[in-house]
Image 1: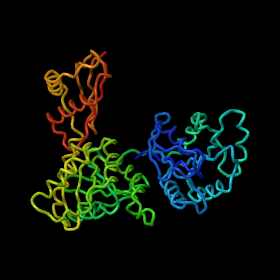
Image 2: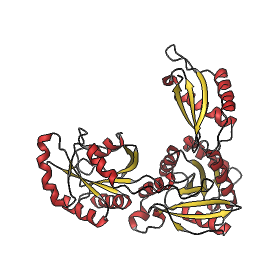
Image 3: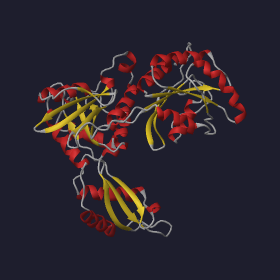
Image 4: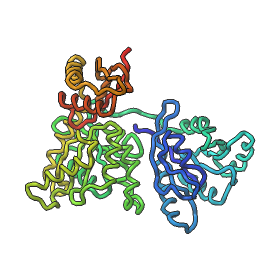
Length: 436
């Protein structure tokens, strides 16, 4: 099961972005005093008491005719729909407003667990200002201060009480789970239908382990696969259908449960910034990745077209230099047969283990031939390496001083491992540790 999701909701200028930044520990969201400055939902990952969860920072919900307020309200409603738990932020200094009451009505309709947080309670003397907020009907309000970080522990204790139980992965280890991510209208659903129609061996479409995905298990040549199809492909509505940014969270949840992620591009339209952003989520999650160029039948081609397109992909997706590229057409099913072998190869490499003795021979030879450059008179020394996990393959390199491991030398070691062993399709993770 994927991580639970928390949506931070409230009218403009109550401090949602400040609370979001506190929870995820980074300054991701724009923080400004001007109401309505957060126009897009922003996504991050929070952690409390070893429990990890998605966090959505919404734009404010408001009723009125100011610019983009309708769009912001729609964003918040979608965030509410995606969330397992909602943090409802109000402002202690302004009391209960009519806009707070409008937000409360929307939250009651969601039927989701709601934790009420009264922000800008910056000292104990201000705690008496929270009692008016009982009238909103969400039980005990939690006094917090986003600017000072006060009260967030008690708030998060309450939030994680409402997380759904994790029932684990219902599939055997040898089942290959893959998902398709990409902008709307790149042909993800058509590609799923082409895969299933080509093989005609659907076992049974079943509801997924979360309410956010539908899983389709099927078997080809004895190998079991599961296509993880996001809920967004099933939902209908102008906001979901017309706006690219709403696909992100659903893509994240599908990525979490996948072994292999297919990043689907539109061969007709070419590469867009959103493609890179979505692919970045899969890369950061450590999943095996295949870049799929769909609608290749609609592209006017000569003998250089495919090579030129591949060069553009390598230039735009430099962080995915390990990902194979597959050109196909879901519509005509041309080259569709090249996809499953690529998925199987990437899945195998994602789970590959390397024997320590062989790994060390490769790493130590490479370090001897290409020692790390000196930094302020000190030089990195590599003593030993071992693989500690798979999915993605993760290697610990024991060194004299981990802070001397420059990212360029880490990349050199990663490329050395990749060249020596079969790791196409999967990212590799390297961790530098001090030798004890």
